[in-house]
Image 1 (tube, one colour):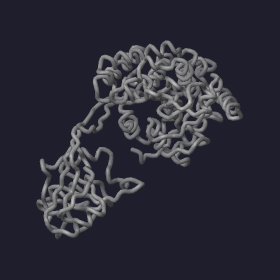
Image 2: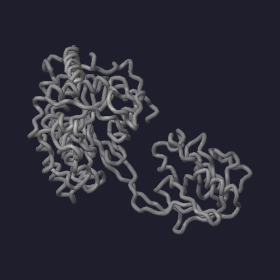
Image 3: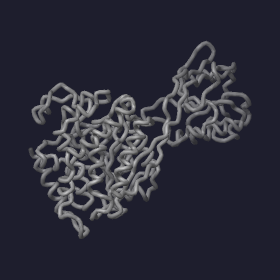
Image 4: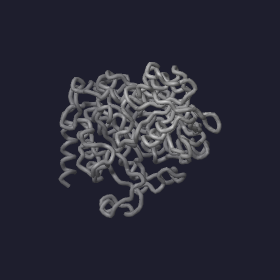
Length: 487
């Protein structure tokens, strides 16, 4: 109860801190805009997305005609409203054919990793002597001086340069393939080894081996067999991005939801509900509202595919463009059948996250959570913390240092007895029993939850479109120091 009361006071402080509003702005844009986002209109969008899924083998997954039709629907409505809409391309790899990824040395076969699934060995594998670079980093042709590289499988360590540089040096020395020794680590590969888009630069088979396989290579001069047979295809899709023509472009309030569904699912709650709420908010706000800060609406491709849409978007921004983003709001699964009412834990007061350390949470995220928790309290729903995750589209923004926040009604986790007493519903049952299944249909949408959550999108957006100052505000432009290392 104390937290709910504090949330209410915090929301009031934000509203009271709003200043220098354009003459045409409502006195309280947050309340005005949220009042215009009606559940019937949001459900109408969900019905359209359901029709699209039904017309496309029951799904709207990234890279399918159902996804393309979803993009076309969102783009058409935004353009009809007067927005300038961009659809930047997103490219990702999808497994087309699984295959062996092995290295055979003598009578023993080691499992290895195929660095690029766009390049395979010949059928049956490639047999050749394995030769370590004289200078183990193998970053330049000179690193192979004194080693018989022609026709060999070059072997390097994982230091100093990118895998593409290592390959180019090996090929220049006459090698026909490359093995990179990179031991497994909880920290992942060394920085710079696998640069963004590295796989597009690889032209010969490249495998990643561990220390055990490398030791076996040091002990033999006989030919070894490298087999890399997995094959992928490049999948191209599109994000949808639209920004208001008014408001400061140096204090952009971003709001987003992933537009794709999980494979073989219509994706009406996950995340048609977030898409529909964000879309209806955009349509009610319009392209030229009386706002202090510009608003950018984003509908992400490949949210179900390692967040490729949002990740590539953030990676493509300059430091200047990143600094222009005041905050990012994300909305996912807003109409779960056994709904909870969660805000993303920007103040780190809830259960610890397995994915995000407290020190990683950008300054300003706590204020966003208080704004959304205050909204839910005003709407008669007691808010609870949702731990921050690396599997939600806010994560690339979080890594870049952008304050983040949002709401969800819950996914596959089961509702506790306490939560059932707090919100109703059934304890011991998932918040969304249909999560990532063919049953995520329009018939299983929780209208009551959606009627609370969808206006909350508009409330948060309207709050920060008026002002990013105050107790629940975010750092001003001259105090933002985004992490360009995410690019």
